[in-house]
Length: 230
Image (cartoon, rainbow, N blue to C red; front, side, top):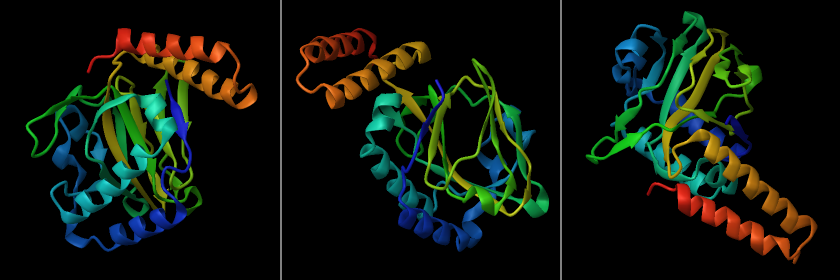
């Protein structure tokens, strides 16, 4: 399931974050520092050092916003979220990230905990008109998908997806990226639960008090109880 979530960060939050990142100086390091063998061969970007204070500060900002976003909770059914990271693609050097699949398991820094990368996430921080290229290209069930969202918007897609970031040819593309271990590891089951949850939300809005709401809500939670891996 590919899910676009608008307005995860407000305009003020985006402005504050991008200003902090623009002045991050030596906190920007070669993006290959955290890439596996496959990714390191095709990854040409910069990213914020995971151990830097700015990474922790802005990562906490993103996590707090996710906790308050019902569409993210419904779509991801998160069990664990990897601390958000931040990357940069400069047009002057035509930076890009070639076709790859994200590693299946990651160690959460400083925790000793491992996270299964069921879902990959990109939170766009640069306005799309401020750079050329830089599209996130995802090989989806329904064919190739090209994603370039407004600043503050998030896209979720299966961690199993083959994907890439096209070359940036003008300007600078800044984004946050991270992974989610879902309570429901199977993408098809998550999609069914999401569709059912959205139907319940619409029915609650359009026909409040309808007797089917209790039955549908019970079905949702019984399915989640059956499929959840917590």
